[in-house]
Image (cartoon, rainbow, N blue to C red; front, side, top):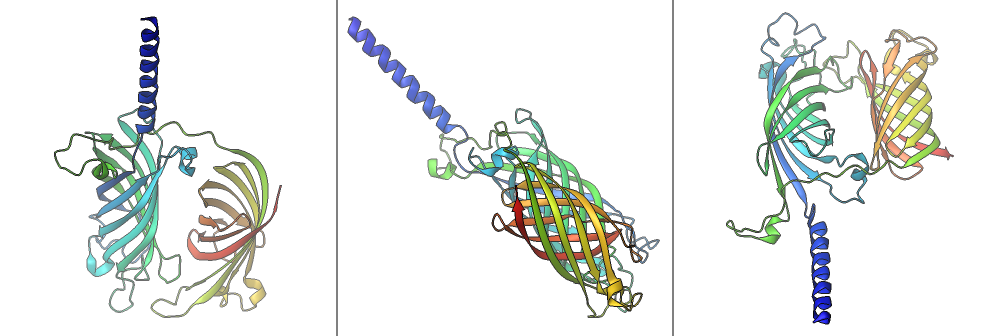
Length: 383
């Protein structure tokens, strides 16, 4: 009898252990996805002259976007150190009030969503930047569209920053709402280029689903159900680096100047940077560097090519994830601003090809857009 009791106890312990392992294994099991549909409403923030006092911008704008998102769930994924952000791609359709002036803008974009609130809350706050291309615009034309000094090209960069909330209303469905900023610009690749800046609210629905559900049960009346949404654990500790890096970056681009409206005239630009970067951890880095700029569109004011150089310096912050880094920099000039704003900003997206080489695309500003940079860099020293 005693032996039977021992065997029974061992069997119960074994069963409990296996059951516990299955529960642990089943936690966040599957591939988590979501679809979000949002409507956008708001007003313009406009700095040009052609559309001012015309009434064209008075009624604001509208828009709709649809996004498909992936939610990483593995503890070994890079997202585990950043609070498990999700990412994906989407499409945007804008209704800007007057298609004869602006066209019918559409956009394709990629996004990344950083959750901020604790995962146990029913209402989750997140910050979501998105970058892509806007097309189907009706650009400035001196004869057919002279008022549109906001956009000088049929294609522009799409940028959006959403401060949003998702309120869980059922197992799969969220009510999505938030505040957002949207920007269309071509970076002075074509002029005029005051850009379209839109600030407003968004409302919509988010549908969460588990892609592995169809593998578990194909029937519409099945009772075997996987969890539909990711149960976000705490972020893994950031890897402390305390490293220093020296990088060299060379970039180029082309712009138009005032007076080139409606023409194919182009002028070359150059950006060269020597930068010191201090990597605090695997997510954050701080930078300082020296900048050399060349703007050939200054040829009328400065006939001597050597006078078209601008020498400056910057400080900045890098937000790093996966092989990417979002760079935010502010700087000023040493040898005069050549008629530009004395302060410049340089937001950029960097992709690290390897530990030594990277490519980068960014925007140098001059109050508004000054030029778009496309370049390659090298990191010769690290300690």
